[in-house]
Length: 200
Image (tube, rainbow, N blue to C red; front, top):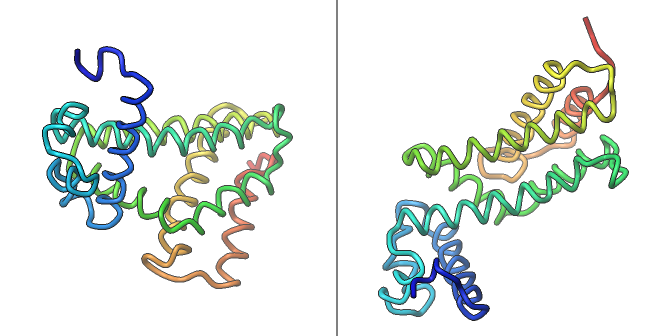
């Protein structure tokens, strides 16, 4: 019986452990070094054992990206359902910016972007994630300001997501450094995007 046919609790645990090992290889060495052999060595298992769960590198990559993106999307979903969680725009912004303080998370996304640049399957997964991210933020905007058109909410949401993702590289220290002045301007710009006023 294959692992995909009906994994047991032990099988799910082993799959999680293998994905943990793959994540360590990805963040420690980069996507180019994410090979089945490297992951098997990191996990301390035989290559054949890893291939029982992930027969090819593409299957491993797909599962790893799904896990990274699904976890982040869960956070976005919880934050943006304003009528359920009472989230306001300050709380939403604080939560999104707090992700920039997690070096592991920023590195995971940096590697996911790098993988997407060279692998169409990875690119499709990343695009689908950001489409859902934008959709949730747009819904949050319309919940906060029902006078916003769907198109305007979508445009603002797209720019907000662009701003947050790009600023992660600077605020995390990967490509720049944060300062009080730039953080203040970032916050005011992001809050304006999340605000309810329609400027014509």
